Structures are given as C-alpha cells and as structure tokens.
Image 1 (cartoon, helix red, strand yellow):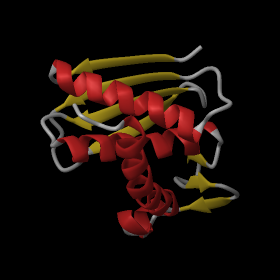
Image 2: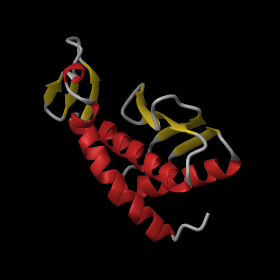
Image 3: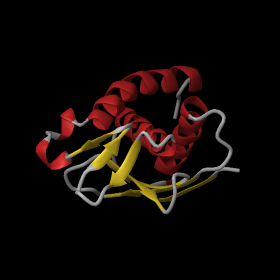
Length: 143
C-alpha cells in the first residue's frame, strides 16, 4: 500500500501535487505496491525541488518550491518522481565511502561534474518533459 503525504503550500497546490504523484507512481512504477512518499511544499532558494531517499529504497522525502505556476509544479513533481524511480530501482544510490554516488554500476564523483551533466539528472530532465505532457493530456488537467 502506498503512503503519500503532502504538507505545506496552498490547498490547491497540495491537490495538484498529490494527483501528479499518484499519476507518476502508476506510470513509472506500476508494479510497485509499497512506497512511502512525503512531499513538502515550501519556499526553496535556488531550486525547484529535491528528492531524498530515506532509510530504504521505498521511503522518500520530496521538497517542492511552493508558489510555482501549474506547469512548473507538475513538471517538478515529474522530475522528482523520476528520482524516486531511480532510487527505488537502485539505479541511483547514496554516496559511497569515497564520496561518490553510484549510478547503475558506476561510481560517479558528482563534485567534478556539472549538475546538468550528471547522468541521473540527464535522465530526469529528459523524462520530465515527456511525463509532464502525458500527465496533462491523460488527466485532462483543468485545475
């Protein structure tokens, strides 16, 4: 059973974020039956969102910048949900003792690579566009 909790922001933002998260779970992880996702809509400086894998590959904390336009909110949710997929499938794993992050089978020193060139971010940005358009279309968004 999925446990998705959303805090902060305005009621409409929480409604939109929850709808987009459920859609992304069905699209990205259709066979998964247990996920714990906590989303916080809050003011973020310098970022639209963050995803943190907590405690195991089934629990996540996502922060989303509150006050964004509808398209940006859904796009950010889609981007962060790609990271949920990456963590869940263990394509992306936390830092190793050497300060590197594991991407699939390779250790990556993220301090020596530009943010947009990180392999997990490349995938998230690529999928974000496709997912956002699909989400709008399939849900016939009229929030």
